Length: 182
Image (cartoon, rainbow, N blue to C red; front, side, top):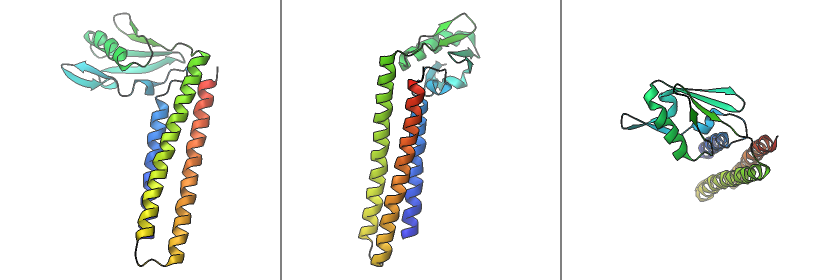
């Protein structure tokens, strides 16, 4: 029972960290990053299709993303999808290629993005605490467990939680420094 709970806890915590890292990758830092385009869907023959499945997407330089569609007629649809996604970037095309210049961030925008990252971190910490609470209550309600084993398991849950909270703090600090880096 204790081992199952601890393994499930580690697995749930790992999922929270992976989701947080995925969310962080979508936050703009002033440099070109293909993760900014994750989740953008283009109308392709009436079907919403991920951008990377209808075009070759690449980082041409630190301030430019290029999108070369497999079919030239998709360029207006790609431009529209990027506009609808509201990622704060304005596409331009030359008939063959869609260019997505990444403008430098203003100081105010950098501060807003840093606040957004802190909010995301707090949401992830809340998710960790919820998982901890569920697992603690499961162990506290378990019958037939020796009291000493139960107490050790509860302490272990708290230690593991602290480790993952520190990991979120480290990821947050790294992302904030990327955002604030000129």
